[in-house]
Figure 1 (tube, rainbow, N blue to C red):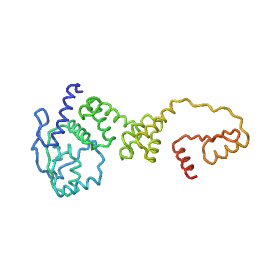
Figure 2 (cartoon, rainbow, N blue to C red; figure 1 turned 135 degrees about the vertical axis):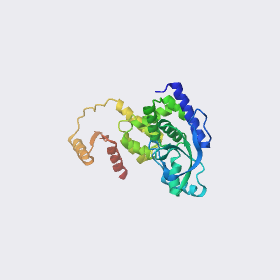
Figure 3 (cartoon, helix red, strand yellow; figure 1 turned 90 degrees about the horizontal axis):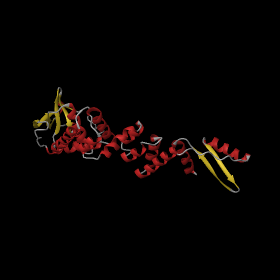
Figure 4 (cartoon, rainbow, N blue to C red; figure 1 turned 90 degrees about the vertical axis):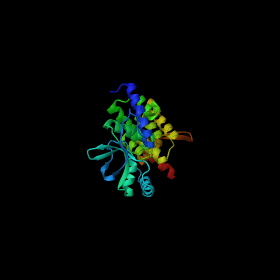
Length: 293
C-alpha cells in the first residue's frame, strides 16, 4: 500500500496529467512519457477500456457529436496506451464511439506508456473532473480505487478536487438496493434524492413515490425524515373502547372493501376514521381511491 505522502503526490500528478491531456501538452519527467504524441491510428485497432467507470452514453448526444466530427474532424486526440491487440483507450471513449458513428477510418491519438493501475486512475479522475459520470458510476469508481489501490476518502478528495464529505456521500449511494440504484443511474433520481433514502426502512417504495410525484430533493428529505422518525418511535397502544354493534359492523364492512384495517371513533354527532396501511403501495391505492371521489 502506498503511504499517504506518496499517494498525495500521485494524486496531484494525475490531476496534472488530466489537465495536460486537455491541452495536448507533454508531461514532465515525473509522469508517464508520451510515445509519438500525436498520430493517426486506424480506428479498428483501438478498443475501449473494459474497466472504464463510465457505462452510459447518451445516444442522441453521440449522434450530435458524430455529425460535428464529419464536418470538423476530431479536434482533441483520444488518449490511448499500447496493448497486445493494438491500442486501448485511457481517455476519450465518447469521441471514439462518435467517430465510429461518423464513419471515420482513422483518428488522432496520444499514446501514453502507463500500467493498468495508472490507466484506471486516469480514467476515473478524467471522467469525474469533467462530470461525465452519473452519480452511481462516480461512486463505483471511487469504490474501485479504494478497494484495489488502498486510497482513502481524503486521498480521493484531493485527487479530484472535491471534499472528503462529497466522496463519503457518493459512496453511501452504494448501500441502496438495486431498484433504487437503477433509478439513479437512469437519471430518474438525483444524487440528493438517493442520499435521503439510504437510512430509510423502505428505500425502493419511497423512491417510487418520489419519482411518481415528481418530488424535489427537499420534499424527498422530509419524506425520508418522517420514515426514519416513525422507525424510532415506539408503537402506540390503541385505547380500549366500547363500540356499539353498528360501528363494529361498519368497520368490518369498510375493512373488507379496502383490504385494510379500519377503525372508527364516533361520539355524539362527530368522530374520525383511521386507516392502517403497511406499505407505501397500500397508501398510494387509498390516495387514488380518495382522489376519484
